[in-house]
Amino acid sequence: MTEFRPGRFQILPTIVKNLIIINVLVFLAQQALPQAGVNLEDIFALHTFQSPFFKPWQFVTHMFMHGNWGHIFFNMFALWMFGSILENVWGPKRFLTFYLVSGLGAALLHMIVLYFNTQGMITDYHSVNTASGAMSFLNKYPPERQFRTDDIATVLNTTFQDHLNESTLGASGAVFGCLAAFGYLFPNTYIYLYFFLPVKAKWFVLGYAALELYSAIQNSAGDNVAHFAHLGGALAGFLMVYFWNKTNRKTFY
Image 1 (spheres, rainbow, N blue to C red):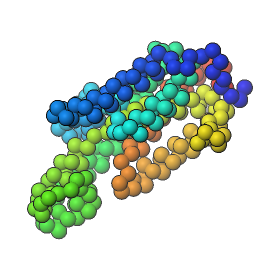
Image 2: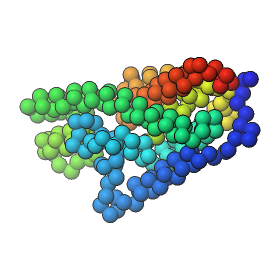
Image 3: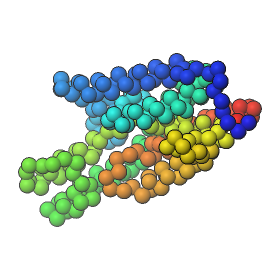
Image 4: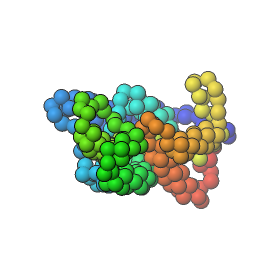
């Protein structure tokens, strides 16, 4: 068999449907509550261990939040596209476990990388003792907002706090776990890029992972995508599906 054919499978199974509903409701709350002075991202988005905003529950809650309409649309579309097939194959309990563990794996790898990056920034910040040193710090860690003051100390301190308290949010890590599992279980199924270019799932997943790894290592200025989180989710998803199917080769298509 070279292609997966959904046949009698549910188009929108229970867990995928409820995950999409929860994500949309949380996103709407993100848009509405700041007008009442409540910033959900400070409470539920993922923050580095060194940030005063970090809370343990953020490892789970961050994967139900999104930054904008495009972010949530593409994540939910991919969740439906790949997650629906996995839930139909595994059932709701196993799929939910898989989804959450993939998201946790994404968060863990991201937090490890973020910790070392943030520690370097903290060291640079505490070594600043001159105006030229402050400018060097700001060149290395550009401000994320416009300032109406020329006071270099204010700009320096605010920029440091902004970077220290940056939040990470989105279901992308868990979705990448779904993508990795789909590519492993159905390697010869065609995925249509831009709806017309057919690529086998195994090559699509490997190519996408390579692109994410390159982007993570490149670390281009202005790139606010958590590439290591994507890789962490894909790795966690791959390891789970590999061990689950180690003695059950007949689930491959």
